[in-house]
Amino acid sequence: MSKPTPLVNMQVPWEEALRAVVGPEALLTDPEKLMVYECDALTLEKKIPQAVVLPASVEEVAEVVRICAVHKLPIIPRGAGTSLSGAVLAVDGGITICLSRMQKVLEVDFENRRALVEAGCVNAWITRAVQSKGLFYAPDPSSQFACTLGGNVATNSGGPHTLKYGVTTNHVLGYEMVLPDGEIVWLGTTPDGGEDQDGLDLRGAGIGSEGMFGIVTRVLVKLVPKPQVFKTFLAVFETVEDASRTVGDIIKAGIVPGALEMMDQLITRAIEEAYHFGFPLDAGALLIIELDGAEAGMDAQVQQVEAICNQNEAREIRLAQSEEERTQLWKCRKRAFGAIGRISPNYLTQDGVVPRSKLPAIMDFIRQTSEKVGLRIPNVFHAGDGNIHPLILFDERDPDEVKRAVQAGEEILEKCLEMGGSVSGEHGIGVEKVDFMAKQFTKADLQAMLDVRQVFDPEQRCNPDKMFPTSKRCADFMIRKQAPA
Ligand SMILES: Cc1cc2nc3c(=O)[nH]c(=O)nc-3n(C[C@H](O)[C@H](O)[C@H](O)COP(=O)(O)OP(=O)(O)OC[C@H]3O[C@@H](n4cnc5c(N)ncnc54)[C@H](O)[C@@H]3O)c2cc1C
Image (cartoon, rainbow, N blue to C red):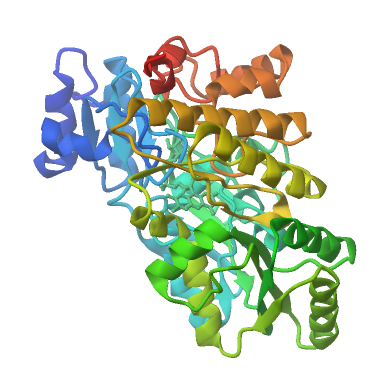
């Protein structure tokens, strides 16, 4: 632990101390400027923090954190604010520490296929820095052109290619973290270390901890060789059921595609209207099936996938004919949420998981829920993982629509649990799903998780009121509780 500086002192007002550390430009206290930080991509929940600091180095982060510790201020780590679960909400006020000035790819070790990046580095920039050498960073959230590695570590992000390549934890060797008392630690493999670490996997414990263990400042990631060949299909089906059966049959056949994504009719129409790819507007569901790997044996897999699609009544199977067409297809898929802006003022994204065999049943339940609450619910999701993303469309100016949207989301998540699934595949719990934690876990499970959190953050000041139902004010804060009856 480094020696406290004169600024780490109760007698120095926190605002003055923070300004001295990061400079006047990097401390925001104006209510107008703070509004940018009042929420993340879950726009139902809003609260402005007391201040936002934008440090430029790990030393600045540590000093900011020590000042907040001495003043007992909550600290809220923030990357790009693309979380969909209210994970960066300043529920009880506090200081948002935003990593967006720390965004460099610091070092690339091509020989050992690793990269060291600052936590504010945008996910897609890693691949951009290494692709000339035939490498890429595999976890690819659809938000990858905005979201940061710090946010990815904190939420253990997945993405379309998670099915084959795994999630963030499978690609992070180690990371530097500033603990809530200002100590700087390294968890897992250090930049000059070997592959394996002895002892407890504290690296793993922090991945998915939703900013409650400390502020991640640097991340050491694995790089993966780019596959020799990609075969990317767009398979068109009359019904969601046919498409869902195809997903199960592909996996049952022992094929592990790089990605296996589904889009229903409503989302396809929105995407087509926005990006003009040439999707059929009357199809019940589309699958994007991407096979990747070695050239040898690929033709046989292509034939197998085509046969499975045909057995399940595929109306049409289009194989991307060029890299440009493949890129275009993925652009449309990854910008699907953006297309919603054309058809609805607001949307609430859910993130449940069901066993793959239950996909037809959950999709049917979503359709019934949509009819019941009188709101449209398009679907675009990681079908191969059973990870659904119903997008519940509403207008936040109408309190009754807000209430019905929240109700629909809750009923869908309840159903996921009933089907043996879970309430989050990749977006995390944040404030949004706090109430569900007690439904998914036993008291003993939750206590064990809290005990681990306590080790890192004994005062529970780091991103408070997230994930755990014990958080004192969370339930009162939720907008759904305030919506008129
Ligand atoms: C259009 C869209 C598509 C998306 N698609 C996907 C997807 O395919 N897969 C997926 O997994 N997610 C997806 N997301 C959700 C979101 O992008 C991810 O959760 C992402 O990892 C958040 O990164 P961020 O930098 O925006 O973090 P933020 O939203 O700023 O923060 C998210 C959480 O991480 C914590 N955090 C952020 N930075 C740090 C840090 N340096 N140290 C410690 N904690 C930190 C925050 O406290 C918070 O708990 C999507 C979101 C949108 C809007």
